[in-house]
Image (cartoon, rainbow, N blue to C red; front, top):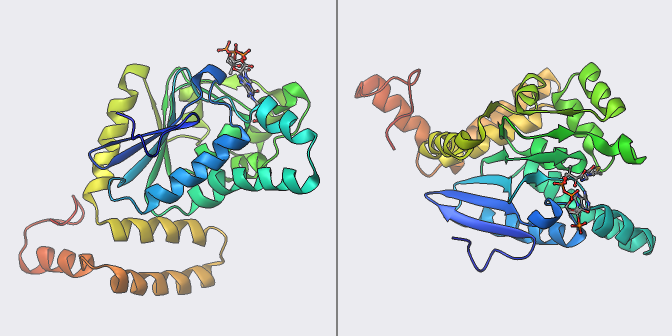
Length: 276
Ligand code: ACO
């Protein structure tokens, strides 16, 4: 059931065994992303980050779409007639949730692509840690079809996962592709038949939920930050981040891991996680 405090016209949130299901909730508009949807997503993401019911966040869409991209009426046309400052504020709300917050979110994130995924929807898709697609999802960089460039930060986002040849092909043609093709392009981890989508996503969430959450957060953050560092900087930063992880980990995972393997001989780290 949707949580009444966190759910509204644009976004619906439901909790289930450590998973926070965050649904873009404008099915009648194919979950097109308006200015008010951005404002609601910012509130929801802020709240879930410190909500113990959210161990993993799954971002998906209600109805037939993951998201049909930015709302041509309630994002583009609506900001055409306003002042530069107001327009900048609308863009800032969207940037905040679609990439700034998601990219460095404290909880693991999975995009579950259930249907249409166009244009601006690629940004939150790519900024989630992992992604699982339905085979029948339909993706497209449709910007060229209506006379704009893949803006916001879509061009930058796709360049982090797709090769230049692949990215430019879809930027230039606006051609659609399905879930299996999205796997080949590196946009999603895997694609499964529609009737297995939720089940597979829950299975993956369970694996993540078994791990030490502090190590999980530190490992994800470290990976995301080193992408823009040199080898020297990465080595120095990762050593410091590793030390910091021991400092902030109340569960003392490293100590537990060493003890249960070397002294108690109760598990093998190569084959699974230590007992928490
Ligand atoms: N912006 C605003 N409204 C939208 C959007 C959108 N991106 N996508 C769908 N809608 C609205 C339609 O206008 C329609 O509204 P209405 O019922 O008030 O007329 C309603 O959602 C249903 O849309 P249909 O087109 O009737 O739905 P259908 O299931 O036949 O098609 C599809 C779905 C393919 C997603 C189609 O709606 C579409 O092409 N949408 C636009 C996709 C797109 O190119 N998005 C922009 C990407 S570029 C960017 O994000 C920067």
